[in-house]
Image (tube, rainbow, N blue to C red; front, side, top):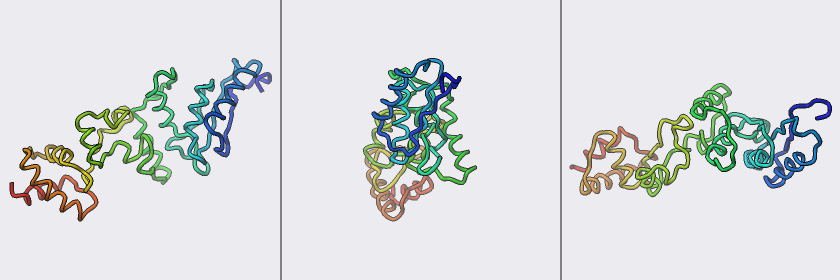
Length: 226
C-alpha cells in the first residue's frame, strides 16, 4: 500500500479484542518493519467491545501511530468506537507522553451535548469527561476535599472541557462541609452550632428525597429554628 502511494494506513481492531500491549506491539512492528513507512501515517481504528478502545488507541500513538479515528461520546457500531474527548484529555493530562492535539478542549462538553441531542442518544451519567456526573460529588469525604482543594479529587479543571464548575450534590451521604458550602451560596452564613442544628434537619429531609436542591435549603434552615 505504501509503495502504491497510500498516505494513511488504517490499522483496525474491528472486534475490540486486542489488549493495549498487543495493539501497541502491532503498531510498533509496522513502524519498525514496513519499508517506506515514514511516508505514511499509521492510524488507529479501535472498537470498544471490551471497553479498551481508548486504551488501545493511546497504546497505538505511544508506539508510533499519529492518527486516531474516534467519535464524539464514543458512538459507533455495537459498543462504539474510541471516544474523542477521552483521548484528547488523556494526552493533555499526560504531557510526558509528548503527544497532544490542537483540539479546543473547552468545546468538548457543548459538542457532546449537541451530538447527543441531534442523535437522540443520551450520554451515560458516569461517562468520562462529558458525563453529567464527571464533575459531580455526592460523597461527604469527596465533597470536603474538593471544597478545600479541587485537585484533591479532580485531575481535570472542569473549565478545560467547557463545564462551568464542579457540582456539590446534596444527598444523605453529604457531610456538614457540603451543606455549609451550598447554604453559603444561597445566602446563609452558618456558624458551627447553627450548622449542627441545620444538619440534623437536612438529614431528615435527605432521608425522604434523593437529592436536596437550593430551594430546600431555606426550609431546612427555618426548621432548625436558628
